[in-house]
Image (cartoon, rainbow, N blue to C red; front, side):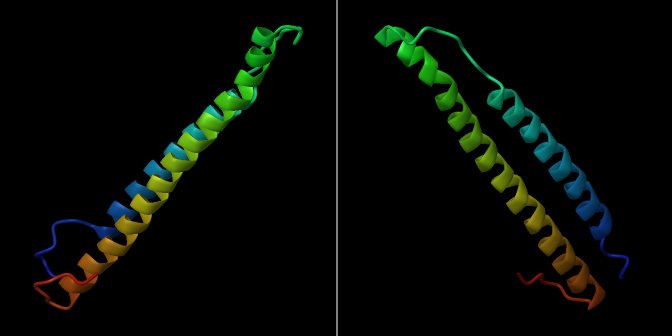
Length: 100
């Protein structure tokens, strides 16, 4: 590589990978907590029946949120890998422009 490149693409990719791993570990913990959420009630009144339905709704909200967050983290890591490799390739070939 030329001396012009002031970053290590491997380091950028490794850092992104660590962030992605930490992020998905956190969202797995959030999902586990949401899965364990329960309430009790007799189910005899309309209010009790509504209350008993709430945990399923909460789990769905968290599943949607963590799924969306993980998807964003996946995309971010893929972009980091692709762009870091493209930067390194452009630098190695003496290019002045990065493709892709």
